[in-house]
Amino acid sequence: MSQRSIRVDLAACQANCRTLKQYAGERGLFAVVKDDAYGHGMEKIASALAGEVDGLCVFAGYDALALRRSGYEGPILVMGGFADATELAALHNAQVWPVVHNHQQALVMASSPSVFERVALKVNTGMNRLGVPVDQADGELARIGGKVRQPLLMTHFACADEPGGTRRQAEIFNELSGRLNLPFTCSNTAATVLAEPPCPGEEFVRCGIGIYGASPVAGRPAGEFGLEPVMELVAPVCDARILEKGEKVGYGSTWQAAERTAMAAINIGYGDGYSRLARGAPVQIGDRRCKTVGRVSMDLTVVETGLPPVPIGVPAQMWGKQVSVDAV
Image 1 (cartoon, rainbow, N blue to C red):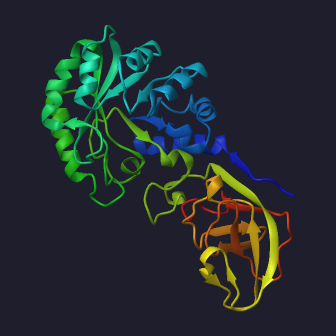
Image 2: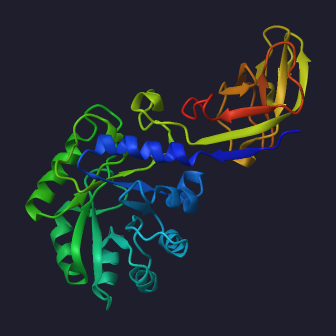
């Protein structure tokens, strides 16, 4: 029987970076590798992209430290900042760029004996998640000014994947960055690939989901933007049987056969990371395009294959080059 496997195409990841660089134009490109590079393996992705991008973004300081231990020498932006003086000192020793996104972090940095090459001050322009209020940016910059040689402004767009979705936030941010005359970064993947740059003069963009070949815009396939799938998820068929018209499948009996057909149970479920919400999602088994039926279980996913039943043990592609992860 075939085994469950995840295959990561590093060449496709590199190609996606080159595509996103074309969208970025004169702006630099930082690849977001937070949360183990979206599940693709942070150290391997970082190594593959070392010659393709201008830097990396992580959320947590421990990821930045792990990247340094793995040998990555380029710039690293730590978007979540730091919890306390001890972590800040570790980030300084690793020569990474911390983000200050609240008053408490600014106080900790102001008390630090260290001077950083670069620190990003994140301002809240409407996402209302992280970031100091715009009207407090001057004060926080003054507070940390003696601890950084080259400050960087930063914000994050809430609706970059919608037409005109960056307009209001960009207006606020452009006014602030123009007045302070500091380098800045604001664009995620969606803001990078859609229309004109919302904030002219941006130093670098921060691309995440597009690096891995998924679409940054709902309803538009990744291929429309020239992005290739990076991950393939495969699992084996562990059972197959014929269903008579009216027979039901899975917990809650939420699906029933409209006619005589066949099903296949695939040895993967939400306990393995396949979405429990993937109802009617495409699955490829050989040359058959199937769809999930019933509820996804912890260890099993059932698909309707049509007749005749597929052989037990054959591999099913849950997503990859034949099945778009966006469709799932």
